[in-house]
Length: 244
Image (cartoon, rainbow, N blue to C red; front, side, top):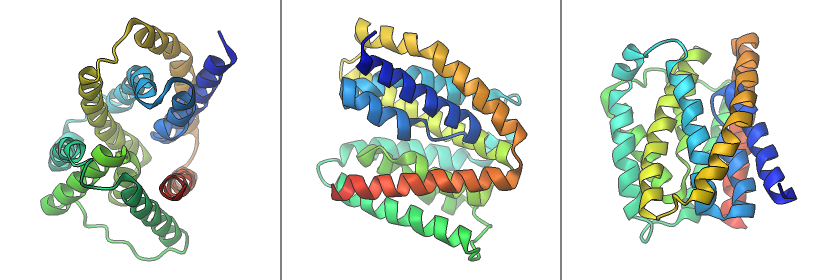
């Protein structure tokens, strides 16, 4: 295996460890590394299978989350609609401008959390769920940035870390299904891409398993702080992407 492919493997393993620990963060780290070697679209396809497997584990780790699915049904449905619409608005909306706005919003949320500004908690009403899901979906369709927005919303809405990672897994899995259909339309399911994706599954899932063990051992306060750090990194990354 070449040095470039080893770099993809290393980046994916580190990202999977973080994903297992916090329930999110895999695309933030793994996709830029893989895209540098393989190209953006190929990177999405190669990382899609292991990402969906990790999300599946997060969703069903404590059984079928029927109550959570019912609670977030409006959010998930509007998220899917927003992703589809966002994909059709690429020619109208600027991914750079959207990335800048999202990056600044993430920084504001992290600062507000650190200085303990009061944030609203009654956020599970259907209109708020629908607007949040739809806006997150549009941003995902235009700039592939669904994750950070949903993470902010769910962290305010859900106090328990296991509920948070399960809910984020649901939203992430739904987004990956849409990406999978898009990849099929791009005709990127080549034997080489699928073979490399399969090769990554075992080391990624091993690292992910270790991350889950870490998640079980850290308390809620430390978990929240680590999520804030990851969201801060995401915000800075989005702003850099917008202005670079």
